[in-house]
Length: 303
Image (cartoon, rainbow, N blue to C red; front, side, top):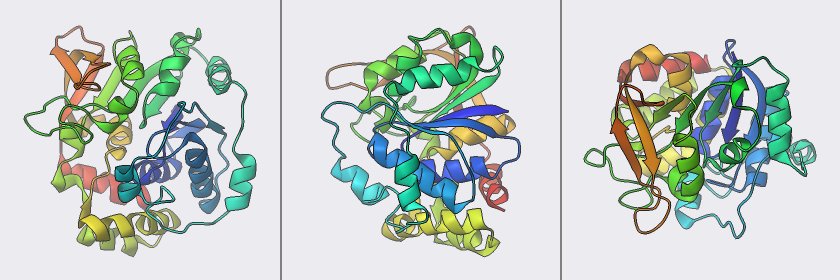
């Protein structure tokens, strides 16, 4: 399947990217970055570092940056100064800086890539604030998009509060206007929210990290290196963004409910997801997962 990844790597984005690069069923036709866990530029460099380390050549586009963007202290504590868990990965750093594409119009470039394929042939996998995707909807490209898989939102605040405010998950909070535009579009969307992705039985603890290290493959070794410091710091680390990839590749391990979704765009509830569950909703919200199968997805995907 042909996929465009829109990311802000980020530890969990990085692991999702490694898994996607190591999956024969996924053809990454382009990868765009946006300000979120890191700046759009740092995201592009981190993406190229990972691709270089695994010997992959992927078209990487530095996407949109928001005026006045500044990484939060929380983001640095979670993802490290380098965005990759302070893993000190310098493989191909100079070439990564050189290859990161400074497009004058990254959204038009993404639209051109989409339009080079058949209608309904490309899937979008979005694990970052939806700034790029909302801008892309202004282009005449919807017909080329099959589905959109999103890590974003918190759909059951009784189970898990937001991780920025009580009401909001990080990706939706960072660009609530974009999140509302995308979720409230007529695109077919599969969404993984914080109440699902924060489950401890799906996180990486020291035991699972050792299992990843023991695989011995290049993807597993790279993933383990990126995860080591965050796991040491927090004792377990949630791979939020990997859920979106798993929902794309192994949808049978998830339970889903269809809904219409709006996102609060201002005020103290900015970024809050409002889901109206109905059969004609364009959003399929993943509300449960087989935890053992999710862990197997990670381990098998790194082998």
